[in-house]
Image (tube, rainbow, N blue to C red; front, side, top):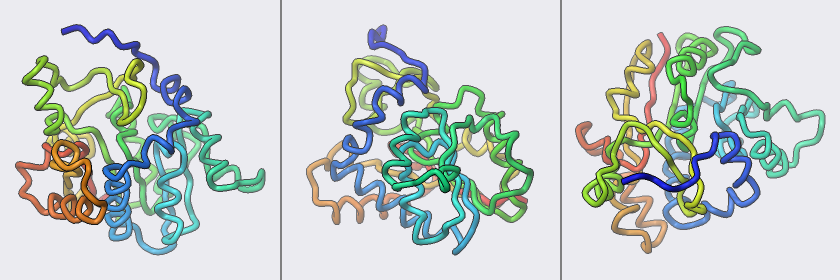
Length: 256
């Protein structure tokens, strides 16, 4: 079945939804996901670590790491999203370099081995057309012994499998509209399996994948946040062969 929705370049798509982006994710499912991701970041990032946030959007990663470190740089290809990030964090001109307009596949303005932690949240890496180039750049700027955390859209998410039975769409790439947004427009995205994501970052050690939101997005959308968080936290402990069923897939690892 042909997808008749309008496919926009990623930068244009996120520019178009930048003003309402934060309000889109106020539902219990999204807030519960954020709480689980925040807990993972708390365990992953050392106090006062230098953090690079690739695809920072409106600054959620900064909000999540603010109580861990002040040494933060967020980059994004959407200037409109960055404008929202600066507003959200009330930045003045002296601190504007906290959020920069840049492509995670082209980090030549950053030195080798310059960050203790590199993160990419909420599927930003899934919108990169040259994943190998982006992965190589992220690894280049990460210090030896530093930690990487990448969150992508999962190819075999339970929600996608349910749609597959209806219309046969469960490919490795294709149009994507973010949750709760206008579905008339989409942007291109790649959907990863745990194996494919690990292959992108093959130089990592202590690699771990974590599924995010297997059951809640499909069957428990009206539950209280406390119960949703408990369920998502439980899902993170499921055996590896079930990880690909999450709405999102998180990979963590350490650079040799």
